[in-house]
Length: 364
Image 1 (cartoon, helix red, strand yellow):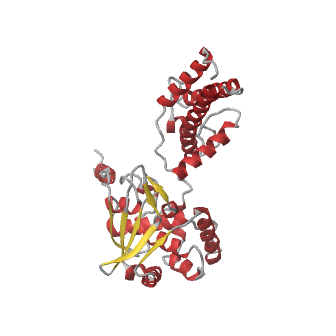
Image 2 (tube, rainbow, N blue to C red; image 1 turned 90 degrees about the horizontal axis):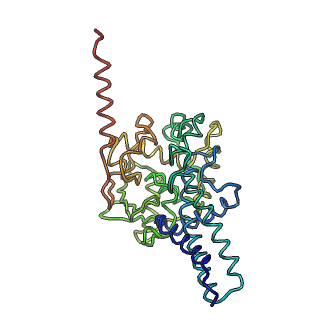
Image 3 (spheres, helix red, strand yellow; image 1 turned 30 degrees about the horizontal axis):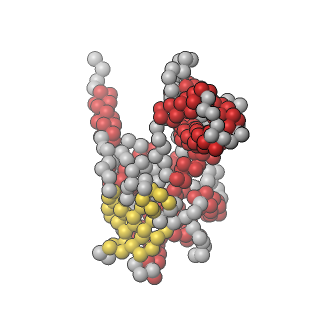
């Protein structure tokens, strides 16, 4: 066994102290691998910092997660490697210890710089405030959102795309589920969902109703959303799902391996059907349209949040507006296994009414 010198002890204690100070990742294995890959890319940058002035906020947020998750994982694994090297008297022990010291130093500096540890010393706040401090001249987040494309599309745009989709397309049923429910494509990717194995969306008959079960991907707890489809109100896409279910003994599982492949297929098909559009039709346009229809059907609030797979009713304003509804009623009901935090929509509506009341008063 190699001699446990004070330098090695200090290296291990510093590394373990930093690991203990960082929150343990709750990301699913697929997301965790994504963070590790991104952390390796960040490591080769001149300065290890999640903030780059040219990045959008979502990119910055993802890089912050990669720094926390990837940095913690890398330090933990290299610490174990150093302990093993000390046990086996590995001649590379000194090199491993120096690598660990460098890793800890860079990650610590990046965390302090980003406001995650100690005092940054430069007065720069963390999170969204830090991003805005170097991005004040950039357009508001969501200014070019795909939801604004809805105003340029005819009411039957989804039906026209569905009619042009080849019958043997490998993405046919994924598009059908996305069209009806407004789910994210990531929701159709199988894998681990907070400790539960998920095979994909389940489409089945229950009491002569077409029902779709989906576990949202963007959640820190296991959640299942149940969609009861209005087959007549939805039209051809729902009728084809019914026929497909009947051919599969009343139940089928729909999953995809690559959301990007489905997205690109939808974009290509959209350009064929609507060549006059400058913007591409993407899965997010389908999602925005579904939420716009839901807002017209149920009003903004809890039902729309459940349909969107949100934990609260506070973010649905980023999607389609009710005035862009096509009038389609794709769903009879939606429900989820978790309680939705509500109140944001009602609060915004109350403030709107208050402002209207004030503006209606005559000036004295």
